[in-house]
Length: 326
Image (cartoon, rainbow, N blue to C red):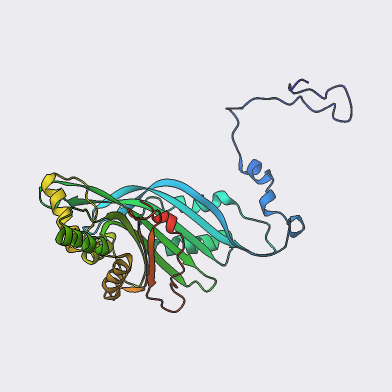
């Protein structure tokens, strides 16, 4: 069977129609009238809704990427590749939305410096353009910080997974949340004591187990307050001390072993140490901390979740521990 376009000329009611052409016309230009004539199936009438006629709380696009501008704590502007998810609500009487409009609206802000506060401005534009009652934005990026080695004087870039999340409801109440991932080493206190027992009682050499671990700190910022990525990093480092290293020489590796010996911790200890530190920051209205210690002794991980738990805030319901594997 041939796939070639055929002409209807000379037969049937469409004989006056020209033959279909299979080509891309590089000379064609879209006029306002032509654009207005294009069908818009997504915004069809209620009778074209398929399935249950119910509202949809989130519909949109996930995973479009672009470089955005961010400010460091020293007010230095840096450009970072950012992965964006934008969604809005759809009423029961609305068939759907024009997905591309979510991206087009976001691109109007692409040259701005991005802060959690800017998300509110974008979300209000979403509500206006998409005629919705709710809207959400999620910006995921890897934020670089130059970190010094412990003793050698070297330094290297550590990258931190950061998410800016903003949501706005039908009453235009805006909530901004920052998620920050901190990777550290956790030396097991029980293993350390058992190793020392073998050394003292039987003169047997042993090595306590330690493992790479991750804490995901989610903070809800007070209205009008500002918390930088550097602030979140400083809190995590002050609470846990044993951040994984970038560039090391032998003296750094020895120092890291000593550091782990000085700051041994179970996953429960890590969660409580972080809680203590973030609870003392008055700029943070609410927070949640999820920790995972990727056990080298067991074939499973040790996990813990705590939260401050303000009204309508975090409730320690975090369950995505697989995302903490590092």
